[in-house]
Image 1 (tube, rainbow, N blue to C red):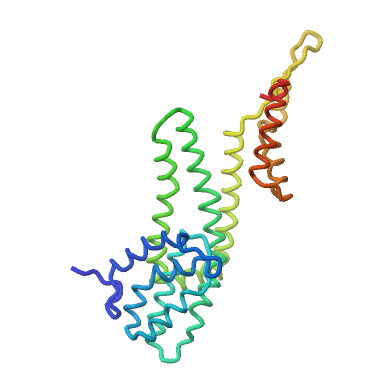
Image 2 (cartoon, rainbow, N blue to C red):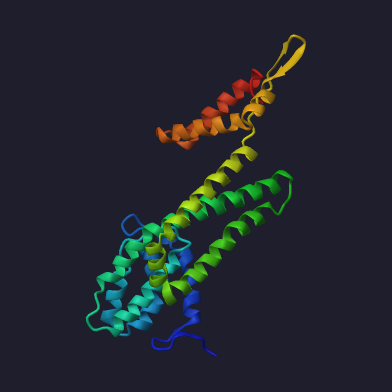
Amino acid sequence: MTEYVSKKNNITKKDFTKIFWLSFLMQANFTYMKMQGVGFCIAIQHVLRKIWTDDADYQKALQRHLAPFNMTVAPAPLIMGISIAMEEQAKEEENYDFEAINAVKVALMGPLSGVGDAFFWGIFKLLASGLALGFAQQGNPIAPLVLLAVFNIPNFLTRWYSLKIGYARGQEFLGELETSGKLQLITYCAGILGMVSAGCMIALWCGVSCPLQFEVNGETFVIQETLDSIFPKLLPLVCVLCGYSLIKKGWSSGKITLVLALIGFVLGVLRIVG
């Protein structure tokens, strides 16, 4: 039995499943002129064909959704759902302002990208990498699976449910968030969590220490123990902040890696760091 999302335009659940899978190809169709616009249009074009049965109207709809589009890809199906709902509304209203469709897309790209970047690149990516590295250091073969699962499970769920929410009540939902200020709060909190995750990664995986020690009045003075008593993991933090400052000055990551490797080699030979 066919399960309809919209009987009026013959849109089925299978159509939405197809949009879900095609949304993963948005970056594959990236161009400098349209950015993700081509991928966005390809993802929803079969539904547009069902809404606009007249060839001329269908071609105009394709042109609308070939406009430049660029955002974090995981929550992009939310805008796809909203766009489909707006296209259906445009078909029903004789004097509908078609420019409103792309206006809404452009208005939502910024705030959704802010939330998406904070969560997917600031939290889930770091969390997945940290967990996978822990298993990899132990020689556990499931490390790659942990990396893929921890990052992709939220990715898949976000794409599927945001598409459904976007179609059902996306505009109302985001309007409520923006009006109440909750969208900004979510972005701010996600940024804090991302920084905490980055701090944990620095402490766990950046192994820089100072093995120097001196004899003072018969007592052994170990520099690393003194540093840890003042500020634990200070040297890894200084190392990362130095790298970050060089990035801000325009240094490439490859150049920074090479310089850090040379400095680490020289200081290691001199037994200044370990």
